Image (cartoon, rainbow, N blue to C red):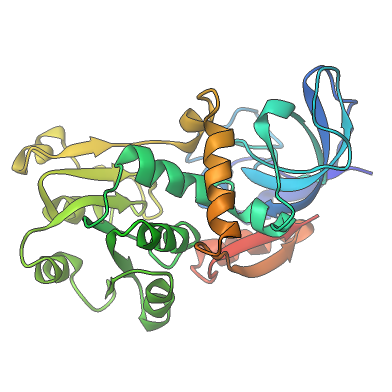
Amino acid sequence: MAYAMAISSPGGTEHFHRIEIDVPAPGPGEILLRQTAIGLNFIDVYFRTGLYAWPVKQDLITGAEGAGVIEAVGAGVDLRPGRRVAYTLPNGAYASHRIIKAEQAVEIPDEISDEVAAAVMVKGLTVHYLIHHSYPVTAGETVLFHAAAGGVGQIAGQWLHALGVRAIGTAGGAEKCALAAAAGYDAVIDYSAQDFVSEVERLTAGAGVAAVYDSVGADTVMKSLDVLKRFGTLVSFGQSSGPADAFKITDLTRGSLRLTRPTLFHHTAEPGWLQRASSDLFGMIAAGKIKIEIGQRFALSDVAGAHRALEGRKTVGSTILVP
């Protein structure tokens, strides 16, 4: 029987519960996917807690990425049953089976596992748009990336290194700083023991950085502005420490700075972007330029435990839920 782990109402992890689901036959342009691996991301927490608006009144099935095997296809679909595919969508991944549009799926290359594919559809594609679109990096530039030891941060460090960009990362504690350094960052600042503003000033001889990629939010945004060079760009793409309510548009005048607040699903909605970006990402992984660490696995039925580990900063690399 197909099942999902739903959230009864916005709040804590105790609101997760199992529900049986009826999966219909796929309609025109759709596929039926039996999921083998599901990724865990902070956006799932944002939806669970109600920080992001719910699209339903109750029993929200969240989860933004997954991978599996096609079991059936609707009319007009070129993909065939038995093919392995991955996807990213705002919600619905915490389930054993689901229907999605064929155009929302990307085929997984033979050399990449379902778990790796499920782990990178949000994080890897996020890095793609950050460094190719939000602020397109150029070899030789210096940028700052917060939360460098996280799933997104580790992919970013490797990709920036491969592009010849000097990347400075921030992380909390010696262990996470070591992980970030191993991921390709040229320098890593321990924000639990060092002031990252003064450290960036030292590392850049007072020049500052061309861009800051900030997913932390309230705790870092104002200081992120302080390390940007004139005409620099702040890319704010998350708020793990809460929304940056202290920020005002006039704060950008200190250096004619630029600010962008991108989201993944605006990019995936652009025709052709998902296929191109996924091809780039899978190519980097297949070439060994990006290595994905699956730091922990949880049964889908224990998704509450997975959320607690993520929020408690007890995860390393990527986390996979297994139906």
